[in-house]
Amino acid sequence: MQHDPLAWETFELSTVAVRAGVHRTNEGEHAEPIFATSSFVFGSAAEAAARFGGSEPGNIYSRFTNPTVRTFEERLAALEGAERCVATSSGMAAILATCMGLLKAGDHIVASRSLFGTTPVLFNNFLTKFGVEVSYVTLSELESWRLALRPNTRLLFLETPSNPLTEMVDITAVAELAHAHGALLAVDNCFCTPILQRPLDLGADLVVHSATKYLDGQGRALGGAVAGSAALLESVYSFLRSAGPTLSPFNAWIFLKGLETLPLRMRAHCEGAQVVAEWLALQPEVARVYYPGLASHPQHALAQRQQRGFGGIVTFEVKGGRAVAWRVIDATRLFSITANLGDVKSTISHPATTTHGRMSPEARTQAGVTDGLIRLSIGLEAPADLISDLALGLKG
Ligand SMILES: *Cc1c(COP(=O)(O)O)cnc(C)c1O
Image 1 (tube, rainbow, N blue to C red):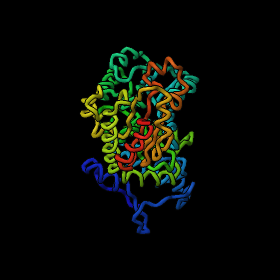
Image 2: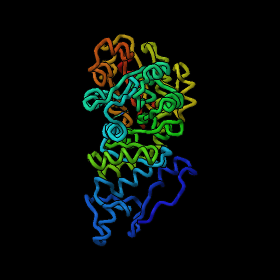
Image 3: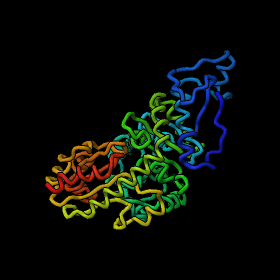
Image 4: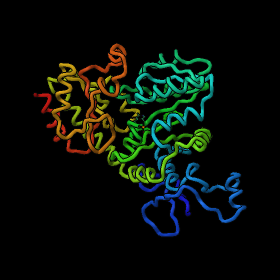
């Protein structure tokens, strides 16, 4: 196969999203082919030996690597500005592979308290079984990150903006703290995608993704990825190759196609979310709106500096608690009632009784996830139609 020869760091992201990572076979195909094959054949016994021995690069078996998967990995690496990226079977597998590849018994993780709900479950219920310790801190408070560091802290882990309250932290400041302590910083960049935020440019060591969300963008497939330096990624890759939560070629192809429209979609998600957030902020039935693009957001200035857009997630609190929140959700005709996000179809959810339902009421209140809170993921429908939909229940 003919290799991709261009220096992608010299191109704009919208070009990279469409063109990076392309390998051509001799068949003259224009779109990227799907290599639906579990294994590969060798030209000779000597070539097989060289591939297995590692002295010659190339395909062996699709748990190790597959050309369609590699095309997706190379394109996402170029978008994140990473030396290397490895794809995984889900976002959670990306987080697991990062930890299994880079941590050992006795190591300590410092993570923000406001993470995607399954991430602390993975940390608390499984990593601790292998002797890894975990502490949680308040995302936006740098001092709480500093105080949580221990001699054995090896990894700092965060999402910014957070779900559902769009709380943020200065990635560069946390990276400096990590590095001064000999630790690594991993950022789950699922909400922003590289189009809005490139954590590696800001000093992070690793980026993890749930490709299931914006990278696909059309709710079709589950997948994930880890990106960073070649040296760190080699450890993550060797776990994946041994354990097997790798990405299927078909899902890789879906995400490749998703990446091509990602810059355009992210722009539209941001524009729509801004319109909806500004409208919500004016409604007397709404107590508060959480959206980094509003001047009222406590970290609006950080969002302007750190991100190239404010994202598609808008959270708001209605007056009247759970009864009113459920009324607003049930009155919508266009929004899908689901906890999924990052789709062309707008979604609506009630965090207190779904994604954050397993937390104790006290912990939930402390986290700011009140009974009146509603989270929106703004899709590509016309913002005016989405506003009409929200008005039905709000004005009810
Ligand atoms: C969905 C999600 C994950 C987990 O991804 P899966 O693909 O569902 O395994 C991790 N982090 C964030 C921020 C997510 O939204």
